Length: 178
Image (cartoon, rainbow, N blue to C red; front, side, top):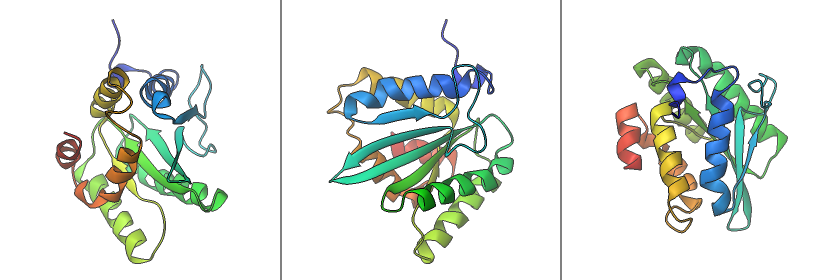
């Protein structure tokens, strides 16, 4: 029986499984998926992200940092913003954004992310943060893995990030993807 993401050990299984599922779903669409940990342990806090997904769109390099966690999500906020800022500084010119996926997104965390995205937008700072609960991420990756690559092109990731303002709650994020 295949475990759901929420049942996986966050130190030794979660990132590895999400990375493998992302590879199955997105490599056939031209993406490169990199897990920054090992087969035995999660990515260190010094890594660019838990997982990165890279592709080229319209001749421009694009990257989605993927952070997955099973901890209290408010404790993740500073780390998420730091990962995004560090990635943007390391590779200027790459369209870099971040997807945070946890057990659920609290109202407080959703507000933190909305405020951060609004600040970045207002101040002309690149990079946006969107979120999706782990169970929904798993469902989408499974669905995309089974679908032909033409059904869900990688440009859909960019379009989702462009609509960051619609990600105000887990329910709103779900409505966007459905």
